[in-house]
Length: 259
Image 1 (cartoon, rainbow, N blue to C red):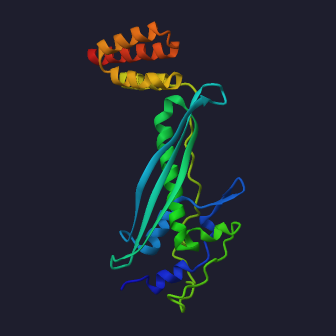
Image 2 (tube, helix red, strand yellow; image 1 turned 180 degrees about the vertical axis):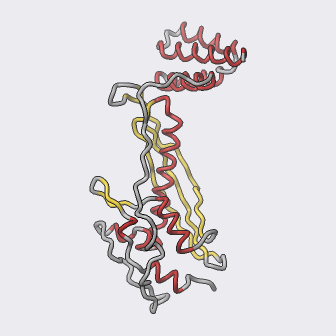
Image 3 (cartoon, helix red, strand yellow; image 1 turned 135 degrees about the vertical axis):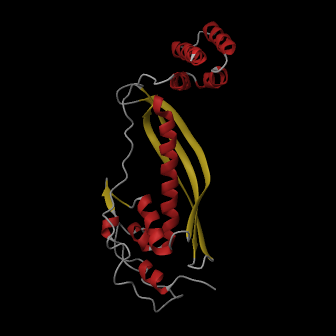
């Protein structure tokens, strides 16, 4: 039966390299991209894998930005399965963890970016939680008040294994925090093409009255349906933003037809 090599065990028993850790707002963190790099260092390319087994939208809330403009906050919950294999490819272990991630106060016209960022954050957090099952090299010791000292001094499976004197990450660059995407300006830019105009219109309607977004999404590519929807909106005294959104979608459709 396959297991970790002595070299791999020696690396796992080393204390955490301080250059792979950073602090922010009183919290000690490791970056998901560094976790992936270290999985490659210790287990090798193709000898570990990660699967997102769940990605659930928890919340999509609309409100106002600090400047008083329309904004959206998105929250996702991710389930992540981390699989570790021996050098010969035999399955060694599987770890499954869950975590949430959010994208707070994104401008409404960047709702797609908000969903993308929240999903990425949830996946990264779940990956890090799964990886700490592999010990201090993946951040387990940080749960001990941010300590870099080893929390796992050895195992009974390989009791004679000693921490490696040199780390496979000794020459790695200092890890920098991943940049949080700039939510950008508070007002949507002028759409580059009619399709962007339609997307912006849908986003505006989504914020003003969520029940209208389904109708507009279904009608935005059909002139007759848009005309009927516009008449319905006016007859129901819908908010002006809804009417403007339907009108914008109609103009976008007309421009596409003329192109």
